[in-house]
Image 1: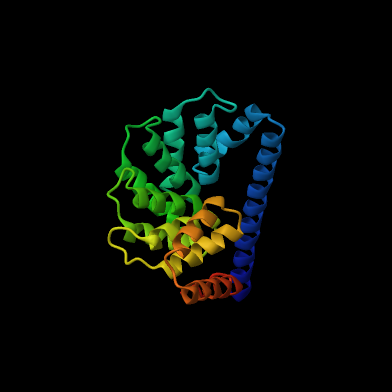
Image 2: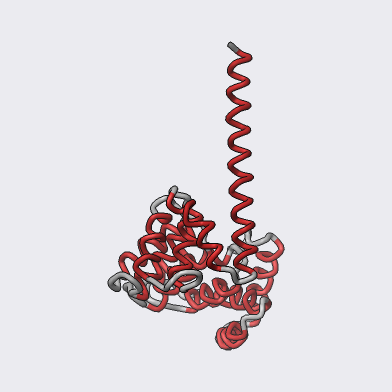
Length: 236
């Protein structure tokens, strides 16, 4: 009996490794075909997989329909394939579907649906979803302006080392409704974003520094260096 169990376990492991290898094979082939611009072959390769509920293939087919690569551009088809992948938890498809609702491509404009799908993608750590959610709440675009909500998403992004998120988080700390102004932390995040090449961050840092005491600036820079040295684990 024990030998039979081991044989069954080994069989499942073999099938798992085989399926992983097959996935890697078709993905690599699709990437190579896409690189040389043979989108028609990409479509023929991934469609059968998409029809078999492969979320990665469904997302890729959605992209092709949205961009009109290898197929006639069709936003309705793009939405359908994104939806199929998104409900399976595919983060990139959730992001793409949310953006379709924001742009009214193939669906009616619906920011509630945008936020719903972006949130699901952001909760999986999707960087663009984190940025867009934070930015929407920071600017009040499509949602009620909410600096606390903006801070929530942008802080996650900033501590992943993403300069755009660091800059936006600095703006939140600089001051906004519902958030206590914190020029030291604003300077900290502007400083880090500036070091990563965000030009607007330099202007923002100089602007904030004008209203800071020399000791506060030193403190902010020390915090920024400690934050960076700890790989964004010690930033408060």
